[in-house]
Amino acid sequence: MKKFISAVSVVSLSVAILVAAGAPVVADTPPAIAVIDTGTNSALYADSYATEVCIVSSFKCANGKMFAEGVGAANLPASTNKDLSHGIEMVSIMLRVNPTAKIIPIRIVGVTPNGNPSLYSLDDVKAALDWVIANRVKYNIAVVSLSQGKVFANCKVPAGMAAQIATLKAAQVPLITAVGNDANRTSVFSPACITDTVAIGATDNPEPGVKGLPYDPKAAPYIARYSNGAQGQTDFFLNARWYARQLDGSMRFIVGTSNATAAMSGYWLANRKATLDETYAAILAGTIPTKNEFQSGRYVVIDSIPLGNSK
Image (cartoon, rainbow, N blue to C red; front, top):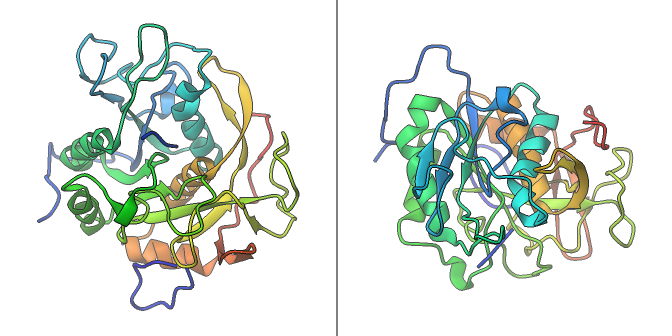
């Protein structure tokens, strides 16, 4: 596995300084998860949103500009394009794991006139991280969840992104991010390859194929063959098989490291300690071994929640 703990021995979707204080945090503001993704349906899970944000580099937010903040800012209309439901899928999984979590959806994906997602990149992720850093204290952001990325040679990321992630880490805020679904045996997504992130891989049921079947908590966890990475590049593995909410309110079965990342984000917030390293160590202490033919690691057991399509 990668990183973080010095006092503990650690076995380890895609396209393409201290923290700035911002406004003072309001007393009793609950900790929140910032979710950098495609957006959401603002009417669904509305009570769980601390605020909403839209930061796009192509096309416009709902206000006709390329930035929006507040109720409805990350809203997307129901769409037949399943990729646009990715953001609300992540939110629904987080809230299945941690129903009381406060969420800040940050939409980084523009929508074309014909209702398809526009191209976006890690530069858009970087813009979202700038917003998180500037507003961390104001909204008491405790976790940043990123189920986006791409494999780049030599762990390439935009200039300044590694410093952003280090700044968040210094403020005890993890960037929890997916390793990706390319079955790459040598690399993981950027930015999951950066040491200061918490890199998340996927487990699958130990059976061939992809069915509409949730993970069996009683089955021995098995690292999904599609989960990127060589030995030591992934911090934690989690269940990747979920029924998740769509923009139109329906449920759909989905599989991938994105889902594992969303689940870990909700779980991290629910189990957060005083520091990032303490939280990491506490979660690690509760894991069990997992492996496949290519790598081994630690599986986070989340078996006390309904994994089916009932919510």
